[in-house]
Length: 481
Image 1 (cartoon, rainbow, N blue to C red):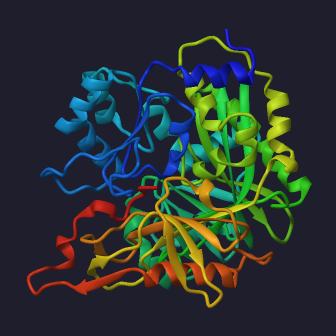
Image 2 (image 1 turned 135 degrees about the vertical axis):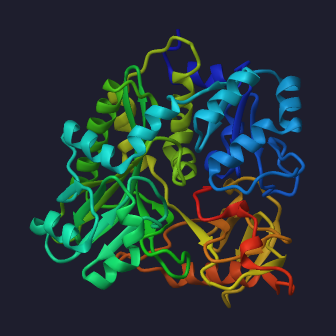
Image 3 (image 1 turned 120 degrees about the vertical axis):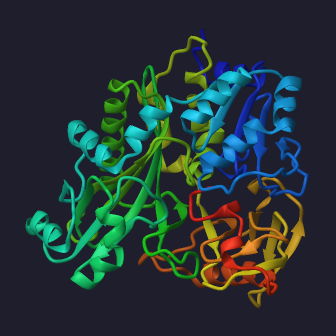
């Protein structure tokens, strides 16, 4: 029986089951290998050019075009070199950003336990219509909305009559703003009519003046543990071509008023307990929309998994004082008996003194042109000079190397030889301090870092026989982070 944080920490230092994080990149759980013995990253993209001791990237073999992160994971799991890796290091647990029924079948064949709730349950929670209904049961309200089938602009207006002229429409699944539509007129509607009308049901919301926040949590048998509240960087054209697209986070002690932070924490606890009643356990994340006119805290969407914000949560100061939130997830699937004082842990996690200040920027290619990358910046420690230019300092696999405000850790995603196209993820930059001002505008420092990183990329025009349709979906229009 594990009864203290020290017990749990020591348990994972001696953990005898291999844990494989199978994903396109190691980004989401970077650093967890320092906490868990036998933790390995099995990735498609080699962000560290072979220099990370816990990252395994098999040689590329012919495969069908990827259309989702699930496709990438299934390709990896069936790769002979990955199968051989599991045979050498032992059957254990598999962790994913995304997985489906096929992934579960492959894992059973390999003798791997998927350390997450079943794909079917995750999909139910991930469905924005279902999320809204779960929130209603839990007493966590969404922005005023209606759910229904839309087959025309007239139908949309009839359904949304109580919501005003300016609407936001979302389909059940989607990410980074791809399936969130802002509609005020028939012209707006016609741009997205095909996507909206093919759905059996959509969520139609009143458009409000809001700011986005994120909070990660973990459902355990003893209750729901809640991490710190973060801002979200959304829709900046310097970072993403997608209106409403997520492009980073900030974590800092005064992220919002104590009252708003407490309302968000209470809502997350309620939602987590409703998930527990549904049989869900483990990691999840809630996006909140804070109404700038009324101060209301509304449920945005829920990601029943690790997310793009997980690195921020799991490397925050509170995590070093206790444990990364993800370790409580892994503990829930470890098969060991344990006790947790959930209220005490949540109180420590919420204490502003246990929250440091960090930002991350997810830098995508914003232009519609397509070329092939000829040079790209390396992953590691970078430094900004007084004139705003940036220079590579040294290779690094961890953001802890960042000491000053003029330094940052860059995790490269797109490398030389890859195609560069609209929406392609170039890389993630992590730095101390904030990248937005109090009005949620990018700071000059943020713009300098973005321009500095982009200036280190170079590309060559496509050859005559190459066409944009031939671009492999290595990092296509689906979430890999």
